[in-house]
Length: 306
Ligand SMILES: Nc1ncnc2c1ncn2[C@@H]1O[C@H](COP(=O)(O)OP(=O)(O)OP(=O)(O)O)[C@@H](O)[C@H]1O
Image (tube, rainbow, N blue to C red; front, side, top):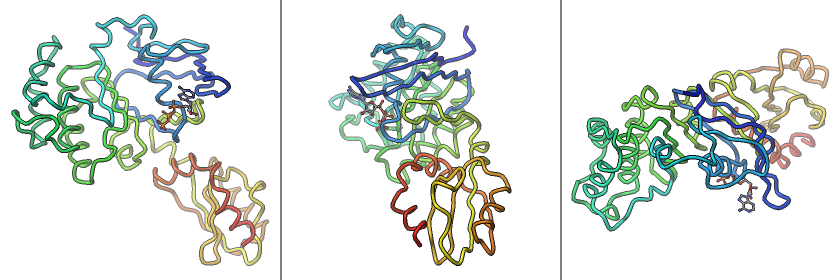
């Protein structure tokens, strides 16, 4: 059995002249909850379509559960649970009918797991899927996916479109299921508060490349927020080392920077700062600052000319 549930080697995918995956080499070990984050268009869907054997790469190799993606059998696919934002279940069927169908399909069906997860939701067994709320449908989907006792559970933006209460219920039912002890969970989301709560490992993709992989705390430690009191014009954006985000608020310059130590304070002082202060950032600020770094032109311009 391979130690990795997902392995890619120099995986590249081009759509015409668009590069969706750029020599991506990724190894995700068995067990625990791994969050994959990336801005829209980072290549997450392309990666999963290749991993699941639905799309051929332009170059490189990929393996899922130790098997080459292009030779996955129905047996391999049965070992993978999948929940996505659509919560696509047949709307005309009743909840108990869908459950019976799944119960028959999966030999490793775990009835206790199904009941425990579904217990977090008010799903009547005789209710049609189309009558369930979005949150109830998400819960039923999660219960079905976990009850099949998958080795790998892929949750792709599972809480998109759910209200706060439904999101909380979804996260709580996932945590209470101890899913990470039974299988490897891949959680794709843009919701940092969910990732902060759930993930043991944070994987950041940017334009088809792997940019970071570590426990979430370690990524937060790479990013710091600095506030500088500079009485005249701040340094040019291009000169600021590791800059992710620059803002000017109430005559103070705010800089979010990556991989800078205390030398950054000296840099600010050299550029006229009378007082400087640094503080840690939340995972939300760290990741979103990192992902938005190339889209920060208007605010940065304000800081530069302020
Ligand atoms: N069938 C296609 N033809 C051409 N370009 C494509 C195709 N599918 C994806 N792309 C491009 O490849 C890049 C990666 O897209 P992909 O859907 O994999 O990203 P993503 O990270 O899943 O994005 P999102 O978070 O928005 O779903 C994007 O620039 C997208 O425009």
